[in-house]
Length: 297
Image 1 (tube, rainbow, N blue to C red):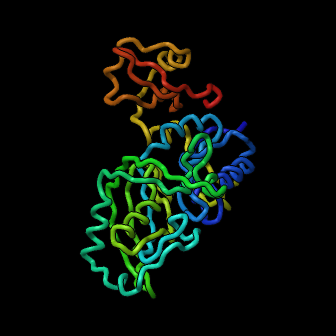
Image 2 (cartoon, rainbow, N blue to C red):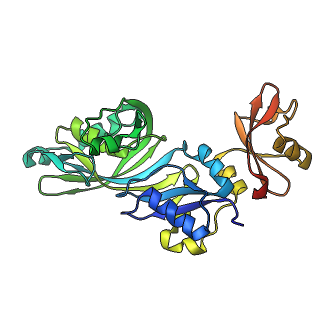
Image 3 (cartoon, rainbow, N blue to C red):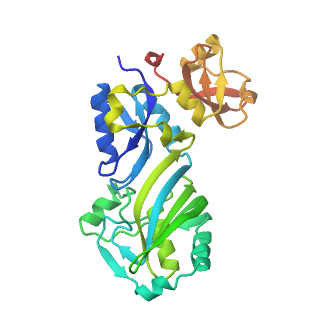
């Protein structure tokens, strides 16, 4: 029997997130595999994969803040807001050369903090049941609604000037649902030269870091994090007794125990270090929000 767990995989460029899931399925001999947060084929970096019963934890991981390393090319726009699309416009080389450090810094600053962002039309967002990128590829015009996101860090770490373009290497810390392609597009638009993304790497999802990830070639020897270890990185751990664990698994509330939680939810872990599930407050009581399968013990 395959043990449940959370697997950290460093996705290479050229593979879709679904490709990586398929490889994990083959490596672990199970169909029950999912991931928390898609990466485009061009992008590399951290995919958080759930195996067997630990797929239930992905709901609590997908909304975590993320860190990306990216390269933004100023001077041209593309159909996809990244290097995989066709070039739509090119700015005059003299206009790109005239960009001052101060203007670039101001442009980045304007896209830092809580901002309203329109996702790229080739994103995976569903429009009337179909992915936006599928509609675009079918020739439809797609304009997605703006959404509020938080960019807590947007730092330029290096730059390279080329013939008619300026490349910025950046690091971005952001809330879930932030599109780095859109940041590239919007920065270029604000500077009047256009912009798109040429490289993207996700290095962090919540407390999970790509430095701890395995490559797709190393899946056969990979050891996933246990559900309890993974849950404790995402949620506040709450120790429960054997009796409390049994009651939670049977759907019973822990009467008058809500004060044990500082936040809204916590990961209930029994004395054996096994994840019982996720609990939340219900009035003065604690109630199971999600139970792990018993087999996960």
